[in-house]
Image (cartoon, rainbow, N blue to C red):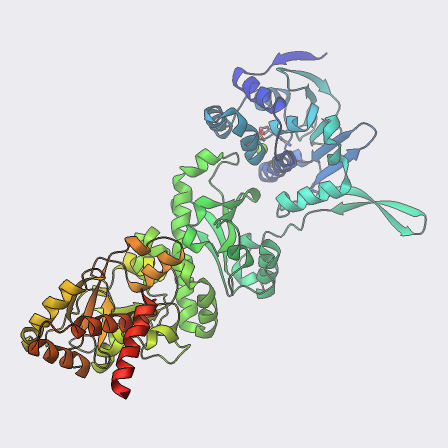
Length: 623
Ligand code: ADP
Ligand code: MG
């Protein structure tokens, strides 16, 4: 005698959503059913420890998928714990789990057109069957002698029927009567693909009968295990061979090179999880093109929840790949729940710490490999200064720099730089430009060379933003060599008076081009250079902006610095002393200004005027 029962109100709402929407990702129904079957097997394994009679001598744990092409059905069977009639009513007639309830709330808050995606991505457990089936039959019997079987059946429209039924084998068969448009799930190839994708690391065998042709014309049905069952991250790291890690990494990332570092550990404390993390040897293709995306694969008890869970990894570590397997999170987490989940935040913190420590270890023990990694991925790492205040010192210690004192292609670090600073040097100096060649000969560096001070030569486009974000290293200010006035206690103020009148005149005459004219403490060989005021853009940044079509006209004017030791400047001073109205003074000053622009790699504003002035001098000299 079958009995008709109604689903509980909330479940009706959920089923209505499921049966009336189109899904982007309906294939996850199989993941849900396999996960339930696997849970059921785990439960009876545990219960049978104290009650062996439950087993009925059936310990051949497996999950079997059966296709019936005539009836259009797909059945997922397990020899797990099974359910009594009351359990069936309780478990498959209400939303038992808090996860699904929260999910339903979240989904109601979503705009209607986002809902199908949410359901498709996260699944709603058993009920996701109704994404692909218009009728679902569950036949189940708990273990032990004399237990009765139950058949549950529903079209997902608000009611289900329940009746006693014969079931010789303990466990549960869930049979999906597939919708006409879902016949693809009868396909052996499609089933294999889904199992591989979502359930490969389920520990129990997932089997299917497949037809094999041994000899010509002789076909044989054989049971085949579809999943590899190797959850590499759940094994102890002493038992995993390096090749196995590499193989797993390559399968996951499609990278053809071995990872440069593997971190495999168990997180304990407030939340328990296993982590398996990989650092690539070089910049992966996916980071060259396309939208930057960061994330780790999230498993919950071996069930794949999300391919790239963004909450597990900050953007500046987007080159890291790996797996997190949590034992605490509910299986049916929605994106909303994930976003605000404190457990995920804790896991992320641990991941960041381990990756940064891993990189530090790589740098200290396998420097060659580290530099190869750094050349491609260092610039991405520098984004941390903007986004991860807490770890900025750690990241700063991972940086490598070319400097005035390193041979080309070699690097120094902040800590080595600081170690070698002369006693009277307070700040860390850097100069940013496009290439080392271009900045190495910059007039800005002359004073540093003369004082035997090192200057970091930076050539990553991001340096212009990253280095100011960092601001200082271990209390030492990071100071651009081409910006602001140099702080130098030994500076001699005597020349300032001798040049004052000339400087005042030039400030006035050149006010269309520069904001100030002053004496320089940074030049020894060159006559003049252009510097940015302390808060303003550097020359390199201005060039960047101009190339992007911004800046140019609106860019703040810079300061012209003159070298009081240079014979040309001394001569100019004397010319001015003789006759402050001499018209040549301004012409020569503009020549110096153009020279300074050329020396730093910028363009001369008026090339024709520059050529004319040079030619006038040539004519005079040769006449
Ligand atoms: P969850 O698995 O997260 O608890 P589901 O909606 O997937 O939620 O399943 C609801 C409940 O139905 C399960 O908690 C379990 O008690 C029961 N159930 C589902 N499938 C099986 C099965 N194959 N064997 C035994 N019980 C099952
Ligand atoms: Mg489930």
